[in-house]
Length: 427
Image (cartoon, rainbow, N blue to C red; front, side, top):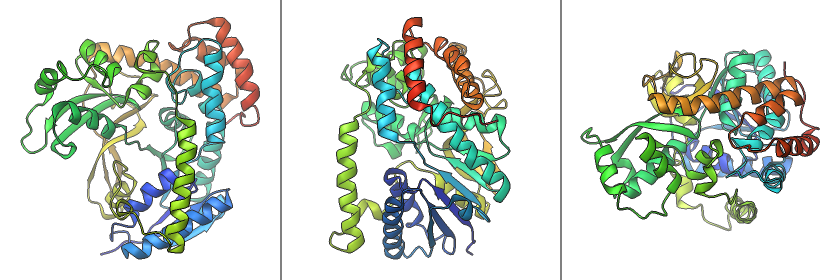
């Protein structure tokens, strides 16, 4: 039995998210007959991704109908799933988010989800996200809005509080944490089950178990971590020693939320390497499209860690699919974190929708650590939806990464001007 559904992918010109989605879509036959509508304002990038989708769709005999358009509103009527992977002038603005605070003495690890960079990602991104949400409310009110863009926690929190869309965030961070643990344990990733709860990029693994037997692997992790290379993911290990659970997902992401996060490295994102990689990937895609280069083998296999297609199949076929990790509006799922917060927990997806799995309260010290960040995220969202420079300053001043009032004022003035074209009220 096949089901017909419409998947609208906004920001389809994003090669990273687009390719992962294509790997999953075109290696399953369960979505045969479904329509994939690709949307992007960059016509050249859109054409490339649509052409690549056509090649991979044919190669996998997936039977998916592929459409493309630069008109978002034309794409949305009848949509069952709306995916978002947009970023506004991504590398240029993100680089400023990192370099301007650094100039004033603030030590960030990435400048994307926490610290001053996280604030300005929020300020410029949420107005566009709310444009999408209002269109979904009007044109396809029953659709599930799946966010893939950072800052995940703040996007899902804002939609949960101020929009009438069904929203879910998806991130592969928990699988990155599993990779680190597998290296220490000397096991393969498929041998390990992990169960996490917390904030996006700041989850804590409540359980680490051997998949085949259910054996608790925390005792073995403590034993082998003690003699493992000390230069390997040092920040996560210091937190592990202090709090007793392993944090996700990597030192650079986790470090965004902590005043001492720079101890795990403060090199920032590799913008130059990213640009070089984009050129290489574009050349490879063009070769695959025109037939001068073979399709890489991994493009014909399911992706590593992305779960959009699993969610869609669970909902369409009522299969009660287990999704290892997703970002949802809390509402008591983690009882000792604020209800009006976005949290990341395991999920079930079936025809009735998305069902967060509660792992109970977090250990009290961890909950207190996350509650500090919860206030930062809540205030940043309020600053963004109200286009308030005053609230933005307060959000900076309660952020543990910000260690100077003078720096906060200078960062705010400089980055507010840079982002001014994108900052506007959302409610």
